[in-house]
Length: 473
Image (cartoon, rainbow, N blue to C red; front, side, top):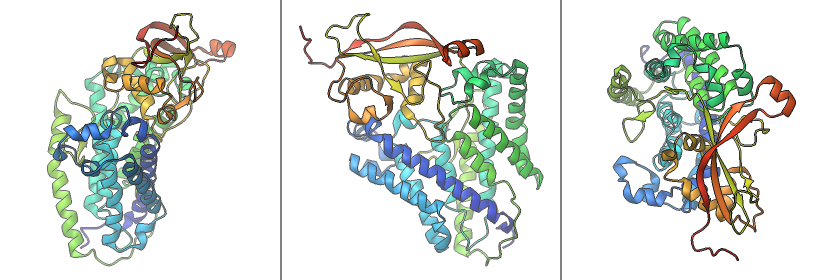
């Protein structure tokens, strides 16, 4: 049926699918390389402890049925392998039903990971990857033209991502309404990138223009996604440019990249229409049923967007089929960082030989220039940013982190850039202190070579040692 498919979008579908598969690959690689220290059997928030108290219906996951570190690793690396196969286009060589099953595999595996990931997987882009990944199952392959309903639902996700983020800003921090948020944001964002220092030092009038342009892109342009071409393509292209600007300004995991991928599905790329047979009846029935389900589930996100008490980044069902999104409803004016230190001294004094642990992404040594990690996600570094905002964000895992550092735990140390202690000589004490960080000025950068200047604020965690370890006399 002509109304069911849009053959002119076959190239857009192809680009979308391959790009989404790349993000799946990054997500599974992140899980495979970090899970043992975070949610493994000896992790800071172990999966077995979580599933023991969480019913399957509230967090459906393969790991509710069985968990071991070896099984988790097998699932994560299987996800990497399937994602790589999708990047290579294996689904195009399979029958339609088999291609759909192949796309279903990474969705099931990543849903299983997110639903037991707890605090470490509480970010909006986790649900966004799952919501987009679920729709990708029904987008078809070379045997059928792209279904119009699925293309529409992808635009509906993009609309909610952008429009929801725009609304949360206008309803949240007054600096968004005053156009002054970017006076602070580049300095206080969770994980600055290599260009963030320069973005912060752009002229303030330009920051005002950036905020105003952001409001237009998030509150006006999304409506144009549902207009005829070429207006929809122009709207999606503007969103892509905006997201690339954000990619340059900081490390936001794959949030910006998946938004770009979504926008690509709305761009009508120049190509000859795909000549394929009509879609089989069973496929049309499945797509219609899924579309009806997702439209019905959209009630909650729409209600949330219309509410004065709008919330960000929430899933309304355990399968993460339809979610609400948003980012930076409020912007911090001051940057605090938790600096973790250890000492081998028998008695911890202020003048002891305290050595600082260096993290991969979060600010530490003022002379260490930030690096680009996104779309790879440094989960511990992100949560350390939240820990600096309030100890309440770290209450469930920070104590275990300190314990693992006191043990020189190999998996935990892999999450760090550098440990100041050799593998066979762990520290006797670990402490944490809170510092205020600010970007240096141009003159300070030339004189010191440091991009940060930090000032001690207070003790965050007093010197702590392992229980049962006797103090040497």
